[in-house]
Every structure is written in C-alpha cells, then in structure tokens.
Image (cartoon, rainbow, N blue to C red; front, side, top):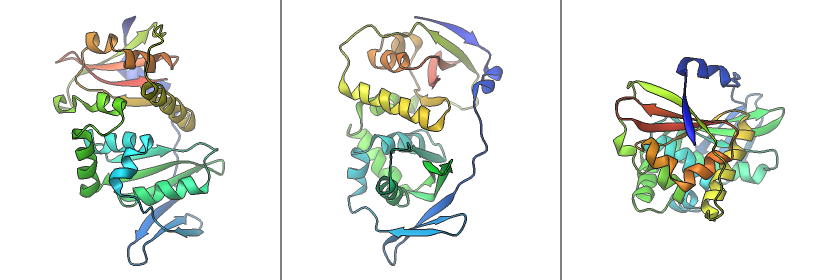
Amino acid sequence: MYVTAFDWHDFTGLYKYSDSRPSGSCLWNKEKNLIDCVFTDGTEIQFSPSAKSLSKEIQSSLPLQFAFMNSAIYGSTSGEIAFSDRLGTEEFKHMASVLVKCYQQVKFYLRNGELYKIRGGDLLPYARKVYRQLFLSGKLHPCILLLASRAGRITSPDSSLTLFEVHETKYQESDISSDVVEFASFLKKRSEAFDDIISISFYGYSFEEWSHNDTINYILSQFSRNFYIEENGTNCSYGFYLL
C-alpha cells in the first residue's frame, strides 16, 4: 500500500452533486401519540411510533448508529438514513418514528418516485445523551466504536488538511469478522443509494496505525478509489472518502 498527495481543491469535481429538495417532513404529535408525515403536495400519512426504547432502537440499527455518530460524536447538524428501492412502507414508518423523537427536524426525499433517504436535523439533547452513554459503555457496533474511539483528539476544524489517495488496497487475508463484513456492506449500499462518494470520520489515527489495521484495509478494499484526509499539524487521519 502507498499513498499519493491529491489536490484538495480539485477533489470537489469528483462529487455527483444534485440539488435535491425534501419531498416532505415528519412530526411527532405527542398529544395523539402519532407520527404525521406530510408530502409537499399536501398528501399526509399517519402511523403509531415505535414502542421500543431509544437505547434498544440504536443498538439494533447500524444505520441509526452511523447517523448518530456524525451528529452526536462529530457535531454534524444532520444525520441521514439511506433507503434502497427494496425497502417498503413499514421500514420507512419505523425509521421515521425513531428519528422524530431524536431530531428537531425530520425530512424525507424521493428519487424517481422512490424513497431514498431520510434526514434528521439538529439532534436533541436526550438522544445525544443516550447515544453517548451507549458509546462510552461499548454497546455500539465494533466498527462504529473504532471510528469514534479517538474523537476527543479532534483539533480545530480550521486546521490545514492534505488529501491523499490510497493505492493497492486489495485485502488478502481471510480472517475478518462478520461485523466488519456487515459494516463494509452497509457503506457500499449507502454509496449506491446516494449514488455518491461516502465519507466516514476517522480522527486521531496516524497513517502507520490505520494502514496496518485489518478492519480499515478490508473496508477500503471494497471501493475502487479511496482517499484519506490528514491534518498537517498532527499527521493524524481526519477521515476517509470512499468512491
């Protein structure tokens, strides 16, 4: 494996950016204990929220853990859940019923008439607290714990960054856990649903550390091109772009 420097300013040309607008929004009617989802054309659907505790919902859902990681650990204002065409109405209702209890705003998006993502904006304090407790007690997916384990070493976001392309990431070993396979598959499906580059935060690790990590190498091997961002001041990885 080796890396080459890549012009950070030219990297934006790789994105397949589309100005997608929300197709509707969801709200929790606490008085009636119903979820209201209203489409932009005025169409409305109502359904009952999930009865499971938030802690159990998070522990049983890798997409939720990934979305919450970006919101609770890394401070992003939003978290997104990707959907494929194979997911039906019940999956949408279930995920929406969880997100409306966790984010101030929940919006959903359609592409060619099919639901493809739900976005939650501004994580609520209670949801942030529950997620952090699960994180600190090690009750999240092993790959999520790995990605976020050094989040406390994040420095100023204004720090100077350099982008590198990672070459020859074919994974040769066969001893890889089912958790890692599951997470890599999740990222791949997310990339296909969004039809775009997938970014994952991975703060605090040096090149030497992650380049010898079987989990990271297996994940990278599932994508045709891989880039990682290094903070110049610390020479620590800032995250990955997977293409």
